[in-house]
Length: 86
Length: 86
Image (cartoon, rainbow over all chains, first blue to last red; front, side, top):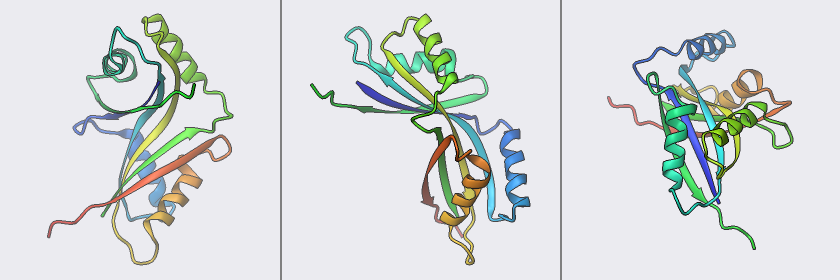
């Protein structure tokens, strides 16, 4: 079994209107020391071990096709193998 | 300057309808080895150093009041200090 964490964020060149809006809000709360906020999506995915394909292949295909809009977004992931208790 | 990463996710007890929907979609794509998907929000926040209050205080107040719905969601954060080039 694998626990995979996926982080999907806008590419640097892309304006993040939501991030801008939240930054305005925190400034109105008095937190001027917050210089920038970028917002993304975060996925925690449990994948059971398969012989036919690697967990990397599974995650990259699912990210490319479903979780990320690869035109505007970029993604990275972390894979942690979880020992199954018998 | 600090780079702070904030992860906001539903509490374990809360049903994640979006996660369920995405899981259904990846199963229809043929990835049956994906057992569970939970979706959350991810924030990358740049905070400049302040004498009056710690970056932890700033982040926890902003999370409690704005970024997370603490009734249904939980959050964690990672703080990385970035050496400012003079």
